[in-house]
Length: 107
Image (cartoon, rainbow, N blue to C red; front, side, top):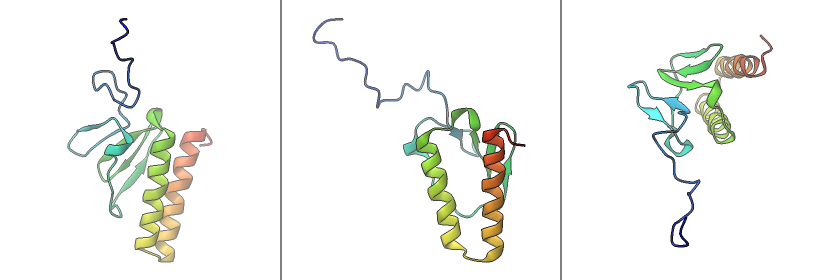
């Protein structure tokens, strides 16, 4: 490497080798936390052994990062603020419990 060559910049995502952290309902890959969407309260959330699906947005557990967890927390808190009903609170708690059980292997 020459002195004039720049070292790799860790803040730039190489789309060819990136491990996607999710995908949109249309199949577009999300490779950076800045691409994570602001989601309205969903109609459907499915937690499986290897991913969580929120109205067609799919987030594999193999790609969970601190940034993704911060986004997920912010999203859940936002849903709680939008609907303060007891039914919504119980539903959100169920999502969190199912997510935690899958991530920790406690199912």
